[in-house]
Amino acid sequence: MAWQGSLSRGSGVAQAGTGSFELPIDLPSRLGEAGGKTSPEELLAAAHGGCYATSLAGEVARAGGTVERLDVRCTVTIDEVGDKGHLIVSSELNVRARADGIDADGFERAAQAADEGCSFSTMLRASATVSVQATLES
Amino acid sequence: MAAERHASVTWNGDLMGGSGTIDEVGSGAFGPLDVSWPARSEESSGGKTSPEELIAAAHASCFSMALAGGLAEAGSAPERLQTSAAVTFVPGTGITRIAVTVLGTVPGLDAEAFREAAEDAKRNCPVSQALGSVPEITLDAQLA
Image 1: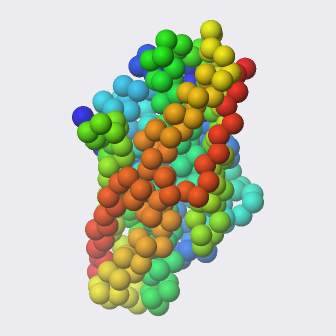
Image 2: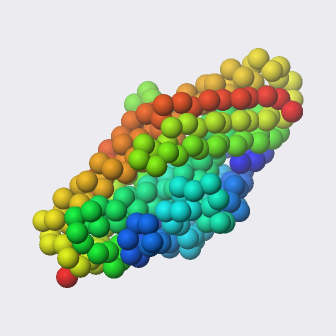
């Protein structure tokens, strides 16, 4: 990450070690309209969604099912909390799955276990509520 | 004021042999990005990103913004901050360590004051607080 200038008028670029991305970031696009720029919260949403998807793929297999496709949408919210300033207050996971060999109850249990097994869910609970809404499509 | 940011991920197949894609993010700034378990857990990522790399980018950018804000508030706006966050992931355990290093160009500020401002940013930036349960977050802050 290279940052230039003050917080309110400066800007930065986040670069990935693997070379996968190079992204401009600034404050107005973090707290207001994104304007095509990413933010720490959007990167967290991508990280948490990715972590949960891999965890759920593992749990469905452990329950005897076969994953065809998982669609995970993760929404991270930052808000000002009393005198604590800005905090990450929530991360919501919405999941639609297509899988064979597992029924709705088994899938519900797998979705719960995936939340417990996703280390990012556990970590983020330090300041945020984490919720999962998962649906098995027939 | 609350701000919501979202990302959508698709996963195909099982954990070890399957693979996923971060299809799109709300801002449209990136995607699609490929992710897989080997890229996440093995030494060589093969050019693919991982949740841990995204956490590193989130933490480095959040920390940099908090530090820029703190320095400017104290009357020493930075010219440039170069921050790196290295995330250590242990499969089965999770993230065990994040090492943050920052090299700052800040006119009129001494090394000790810069270190203090950096410690403050490490403690208080929203991503640091959300990652509060990571066992070890280290900081190396120096002036260029």
